Image (cartoon, rainbow, N blue to C red):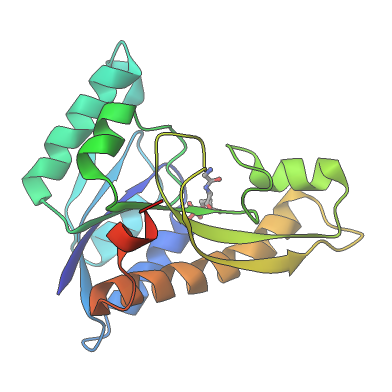
Length: 197
Ligand code: GAR
């Protein structure tokens, strides 16, 4: 059974979908803890499933490095096989990424390498593209530059705003994320091999 820790910052709708998926006894992974950099609404989903949560408040630390060290201490408590960034809106310090690589993956609401960063949906709209997408990647020390594990196109419709487009992307992200976690758990997807240049 693959053990997973999930890190969030917001509503946690993708976390919810993952928790629903792993609740199936036939799913070969389990979520052992959910962490966040702020009092995230998504903690409620973890509580619904009786999953422990931990908070490492960004504002309580004077540097990214110190915050990342505290986050790493929490992850060391749970020692998950895999860390999923599911809407964590902070960059991890390189020291933490390097300590866990290649076992941290991230979902992103764009077809990487298009529109990396914190505003993937807004940036796609601003660029006037007719299609964007969703991606699941291995986290490296860059901003959304790691190896792509899965991605799929999503059309941009003429009347889309950031909200409507993001709402259409998220179900695709969820499907990709659940599939990637499943494939990692079965050994079908080897993160080390995916991360070898
Ligand atoms: C998701 O679309 C995720 O890809 C995005 O935040 C959303 C979280 O939604 N993450 C990023 O943009 C990271 N650069 P949720 O809290 O409802 O799951």
